[in-house]
Length: 312
Image (cartoon, rainbow, N blue to C red; front, side, top):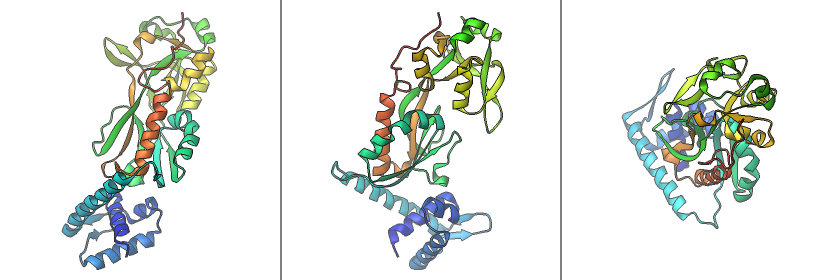
C-alpha cells in the first residue's frame, strides 16, 4: 500500500464528503478510492469513517488521523518547495478556474509563454463566472474579482478591475453626451442580467464618495460579456464594463468614454488557493506567472496604462 497516496485519498474523501467526488478530482476510479480507504483502515486497524446513505462522518480516530495527515502532507509540500530551484522545473497537473472574460482576454493569449516556461505542468483551465468550491471540485487555484469573504483560502491581489462607461460615437451623436448622473434618465443602456438569478445589474457610480447603483433603462439585456460588448458596439446604448474589455475599442475610436469623473471604485482581482496547497510548486509557478501577466496588462494593473478617450 502506498501510504502517502492513501493519506491524500483519505483527505480528499473527507474534504469532498464523497468517494465519487474524491475519485473524480484525483483522476482515480471510484472502486480504487473505496479499496484504498478499506486497505488504509485495515492497515491502521481502526475505523476512520462512518458511512451513511447521505453523508460521511469522521470517527474520533478519523478526526485525529485527518489532522495528522494534513500536517504531514503540508510538511512534505514545504520540504519539496524548499528544495525547488531553477534547475528543477515544477511538474504535474494543475487545475485553475477564472471568469470567462478574464480568461479569454488576458490569460489565454499568454498561455504559450506559460507552456514554454513550465513545459512539465499539465494545465487545466476552467472558464466560468459561477462561484467555484475549490475543495469540492478539486480546483487548485482560482482568479476572482471583488471582495473576498472565504477565510479558508489564501489570497494574493494581482490587479484592479477598472470600470468604464462608454458608448459608440453614433449613439452619443444621436442621444447627446451625459454630463452628469442626473442626465442618465434620458439615455438607454445595454443591460446585463445574471444567469443564476435573472436579475438585471445596475450601473454603479461614485456619488458623494460612495459607489451607488443606478438602474438604467433599456430594451436589450444579455448575460454574457462578449454579447454585451457586441450590443454596445452596435450602438444599442450605454455600456459599463471593465477596462480590459474595451481598451482596444477606446483606442480605435469605436467607443467613447463618458462620466469618467464619477466612475465606480475599481474592484480587486485576486488569485486564491487553499491553505494546505499554498506551497505547491505548480501553484506557486502559476501564481508568479499570472501576477506578471496582470501587471503587464494595461486594463487590470493598479493604474491603467492608457488615457481612455473621453467624449467632449
